[in-house]
Length: 367
Image 1 (spheres, rainbow, N blue to C red):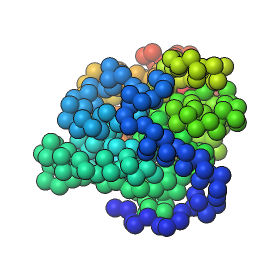
Image 2 (image 1 turned 180 degrees about the vertical axis):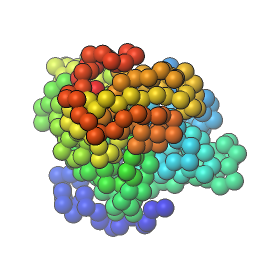
Image 3 (image 1 turned 135 degrees about the vertical axis):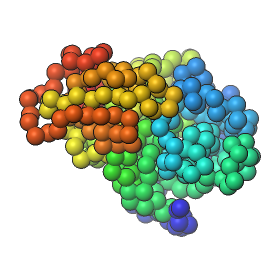
């Protein structure tokens, strides 16, 4: 599916020694310093299995032990309803989430893992046949490419070719996050989804700390200030996105806390759809959404985000953005939306109007 990687990509050509130096230090940390997740010095890049969706927990026992031992994630960026989809994992490491996605998309789906660290990819590639056999597939439905997430064009990822982009605690490591999000927006199909987990900060991390190789490698130095993240997504093309979860991180390391303990960190899972209909605040068009209960594993309700729970068969008054997210995406197969954008009733009231439709206004738009 992807072409041979070029000798030099956009990243090295345009950003030169500064960017290369940061990425080389990250490569060193994940390729040589860390031999397994027990070598991590904080709890930022880890995730308890109890927080994983049921369908993900069921696949984990089928994943090779070496891959699980070398997993450095901070959440569960694997959304439901992936059957037959083409999924791209940014910063796939040794491939845990790639192989879980491989099972979730089914034999007719396809999963691409991209990482810049050869040592990690060597581990991932050697288990392709292992997982093919575990899943009962006639051929592997995954591929791994060495490359930079800031420059997916250099490994042949075409415009509008990917259904779902996932990433697990990796985007924080990039020194050029705007390039990353621009590339994601470019490669997603219309209605496609970005679904990723990462470490965020409640303020901008001081420059001298962001360049510390240990803090950067532990997913702290490069973590995104939540408001800068909101502004960046709007700039790239996502005026509205949604948080799925938001958990505080305890550093659990006195030496690291002494350096960067003034910053409050959180692990968040984010959902964003590539849609033309999105507006920068929630607008009211009198639309109502009904969930059919047909998403596998979710017969009784479906959570679009941390404050939109759709109960099967129960009408929910929704803003125009939410209507687009459930109607103009792969989830449209499981939803019916009445109304359109022909009549506007003003700003949408996020304080009520649905079944648990409360709003914390923490995303890119009010709802």
